Length: 146
Image 1: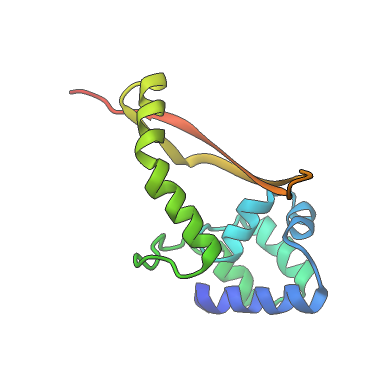
Image 2: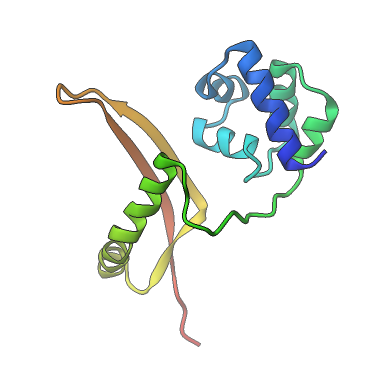
């Protein structure tokens, strides 16, 4: 089973069981964003977590094997068409150079790791309309001179 078929099987089981990602993540003892990413095929899942997820969703061993497989971390490089994903793309396009400048001013020449990294998504109630709070936390990795 490939990662695409794995994701489809997980999505169908999730819908049938009427579970939310947060519930699934809490059940396997991982974060919501990471669990969702692994189920969407962009991270590999440790065997015990894959086993727990497949038990919860009543999925076959093939899904567990696919969850454990190392992913190829690539994606469609065209401009996203989905409105939510496009807005994230737009945020990086507009604020990316600013974030780079501010991060490097505070930390020096380097990057923020997406390997030693975590991210959360929260809902903030606001009388003018609820707000989405995305927090990214990555280790700073300085470039080295040699």
